[in-house]
Image (cartoon, rainbow, N blue to C red; front, top):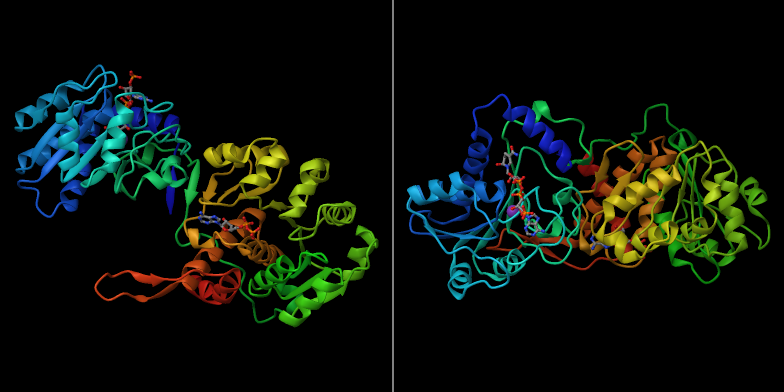
Amino acid sequence: MRYAHEVGKVRAAEGALMARLPEGALMQRAAAGLAAVCARMLPRVYGADVVLLVGGGDNGGDALYAGARLARRGARVTAVPAGSRTHRGGLAALRAAGGRVLDRVDGEAVSPSAAAVIETADLIIDGLTGIGGTGGLREPHATLAVLASQATGVVVACDVPSGVDASSGRVDGVAVHADVTVTFGTYKPGLLIDPGAACCGVVELVDIGLGPDLPDPDVVAAWPVDVQPPEPRPESDKYRRGVVGILAGGEDFTGAAVLCTGGAVHGGAGMVRFASVEHPVELVRHRWPEAVTTVLPPGSGGVKALERIGRVQAWVVGPGLGTGAEAESLLEATLNTDLPVLVDADGLTVLARRRDLLRREAPTVLTPHAGELGRILGVERELVEARRLEHVRRAASELSATVLLKGSTTLVAEEDRPVRVNPTGTPRLATAGTGDVLSGLIGALLAGGMSGLDAAASGAYLHGLAARIASRGPVRAGTGHPSEAPISAYDVIGALPEAFRALS
Ligand SMILES: NC(=O)C1=CN([C@@H]2O[C@H](COP(=O)(O)OP(=O)(O)OC[C@H]3O[C@@H](n4cnc5c(N)ncnc54)[C@H](OP(=O)(O)O)[C@@H]3O)[C@@H](O)[C@H]2O)[C@@H](O)CC1
Ligand SMILES: Nc1ncnc2c1ncn2[C@@H]1O[C@H](COP(=O)(O)OP(=O)(O)O)[C@@H](O)[C@H]1O
Ligand SMILES: [K+]
């Protein structure tokens, strides 16, 4: 389990701990942890060229003390101080250990000598900004961040890659792209959520003793997932295991219906009831004979349609459904029940104009991508992508629903609960139809009795795991890494059983 705390909570915990410790003790713990990771990154510390990018705050102090430790082990350490001030104690420690300090880089220009040491270093420690960084990187920090990211040496970010907002993962402008991020005391949400997460490389947590002073986390990532999918019991039958009803597809949109049903069939539902107009029903029958299907004649109306379909324990509404009056009537009818309802795709487009339908007591799970969430909240897709945490929280609170925001980092939010980050995601999933598989899968988990938050978080976890399983082949000789291949949404369905087995 990875717990992440926003900056205010980290500072409060650090303050409480610092009050019980001798001055400077925490920074020494942080620097020792940072230096130890750096030493592991180098084939040999003795004689290695190490560059420290040193900002004006304590993040720069950590880098200087870590540099001093490496210098004492024989590394050739050069500090590049940036901004108007430099941590005094750190600077003195580095000098005392034999490290070199270049002229301060201030304003726009980074000297050719500073650029040259960065370019040729074996290892670069990024100590420009940590949790104190606010807004886009100013100069000369921005230029230094770019030089570090382009250099050939290993880049180790101290606490947070500079340019990444620690609390949210926002990146305004440039940021350091690290190979490793050594973070202190607790994870920060920005290390787990894109675009910040993509700047971190491997994240290593150094324990500085903060644990007892930390409150509940703001964001949680669990590996393996902390909630087990429902298991059939000896007394189970298909109805007790949970029947999921799927309202998806139309005459022109049939793929979404087939894929969503596949996700539910392999998601552990006792039974999948699928209802739509004739063409998608034919295709679902053909591909998933396990599903019980109902043809809904055009114009039958939402309430009548649900009566025809029969009893279910949870509804999935929306993939390929269309956005017209027919779809709206089906959505309204399901949301008027007291059953859990998952709304996806076209259903979300309808919801954007009918938010009033969400006034209900039963669990509601919404599974938008950034564009769909933007439509519901009335903001641009790009803004949602840039500030994923803020928007998923806002949606969960304004809509009183469990909101799963899909994309490069999948987040699941419910009001007053820590936001869950899915750790299994893979860009291999960025292919048409995988979202439909996810909604069917989560629908099956809801029908099995899981809460909205648990079903969404476990569904995203299994979905990502299935994609990884589907894309990975045998380990390539000599590399230690598995070979990978592109996958289709069908492949994800096919790999779901193995993903479930991995959790059992
Ligand atoms: N507290 C503790 O117990 C412990 C803390 N620890 C460490 O301290 C770190 C926090 O240190 P911190 O609070 O000094 O802030 P920090 O991250 O160095 O940033 C402030 C500096 O950045 C600058 N700056 C800001 N934004 C900028 C921008 N956009 N572009 C350019 N510059 C910008 C800002 O400049 P100013 O705005 O003042 O001009 C100021 O100089 C934390 O991450 C961890 O590493 C560990 O040792 C463990 C114990
Ligand atoms: N860059 C990415 N990294 C990880 N997962 C991604 C990425 N892009 C998309 N995904 C995942 O792929 C799926 C795509 O869903 P969606 O956008 O609804 O597509 P569709 O409507 O074609 O099914 C989601 O589970 C999403 O989280
Ligand atoms: K940093």
